[in-house]
Image 1: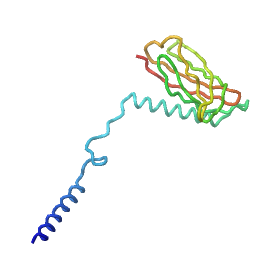
Image 2: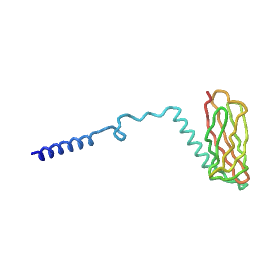
Image 3: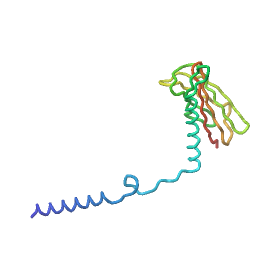
Image 4: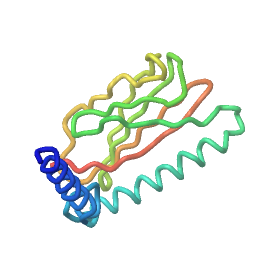
Length: 159
């Protein structure tokens, strides 16, 4: 009698658990909710990144006639006071990093040197002489040495 009751309880529990696993619990891993539509700013950032990737690929595929190899420059941080970045796939000392900030007709340019880091060439952080004024700035970081060259750009909003 006890064994029969235990068997019945086990079967009912199994049926309930199976029914709960088969119910629709939402579109993503059992969660309810929806995916938000990208904002205009996110869409523009995605378009800018696509253009940047296309430019980088063009730079890599076409070496200049002087035999200098085109490489990928990466901006890791750009703000109103400084620019930081590295050169992907390059491991050398002595190249020149040039940061240019442009807003309308205003242009600010500063340079630093590249140095070997663990597995790439890093630019010594470049600090602007004074903080950039509020507004939208285009930041370009270029690198050039005897063997390689490359550049990349990014737009930042200074508040």
